[in-house]
Length: 456
Figure 1 (spheres, helix red, strand yellow):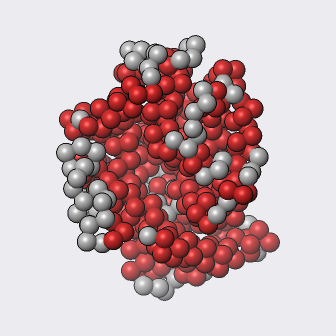
Figure 2 (spheres, rainbow, N blue to C red):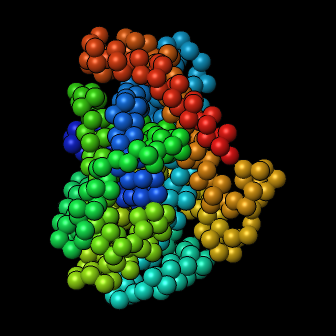
Figure 3 (cartoon, rainbow, N blue to C red):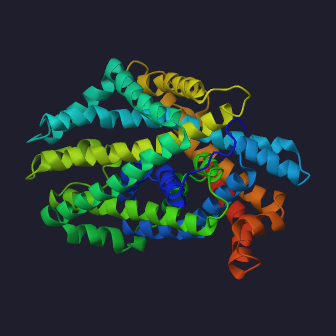
């Protein structure tokens, strides 16, 4: 390793960082519009089930690989496989996990750039009294500007690079110790505002009274996909952070804390957004534009909406940054394992490449909006670069990586190794976790992947 002995200073620092890796745009942006489009309470019911029975066990598995291996995801899977007398080619699993996060970062940064573009607009009072038509025009204007999108995409990437370049304790840990508590404080303020100024009873019914008549195969599959996406299952972030976790810390407790924080943010985000949506008789199934088109209209008509809108955008920015630094760190941690590699230089290279690749997603919304390079493949007909990368990451690579992570801890790592690392002994809880990793998780992920591919 190029950075021997690097650890989080405290267990709390690890938990906050891992929470940040899981808590992001997937919770505040994606969860709310996914729940809105797929029946609210019914979608959330299945989402909870998948978090408990598949998400948490997979998070435990990722932390176990990281801490046991003590390297980047690629280095850890290689070292653990060799230690068990298996092929060193298992390092490819670690590389897939790194690539999942890296590719996600390239388009994730573009979406986060929209948030940065909206912040000055909110501070200037642009949303005060804005109409639905004007809100759509504003969002379209931001996306239509290749220069503006490139600039904000670059600003967000630079912010992520500045944090990662400072290292684990001085950069990652210090940042999340401020950013994650601030995120929860802002969320609670927004929930209180939504309860006082919005229709909280309608939001509670929508979120917590399931209408199972709206459930179909798509809803169940989307709930599982959201559970994995939300917890960063299949990505390299949590696995990489596991390598920085002290040996005395409990992996199962850490995983439950991460999942608990993740679900809490989901619920709080829903309770902040849906009361405002229902108060103005807006459609919760507004899709990806929910927070960029629908909410500005509502907040622009509410007392204190300018302040609340700005707080909301800061919340989304903090959530985006906490995830992006984990995505970038998983790449940098691998690069600095090379002899003589400088963390700052490797961060600049990795961040620069991610920014450059992200230009494809930037231009997909404007000058390349008609460029659909994979039209010869039926499932990609009419898909821009942005849509293609999103499809590969969310619908394919995450599932592929999650499947083999389960196989790796269930069948490649020895029972003695996982039992020792989890510190649970040969207890009922350990045996249940091992059963899920060996049988339930691989079968469930495989079925989801098959159905997803067939649906296209």
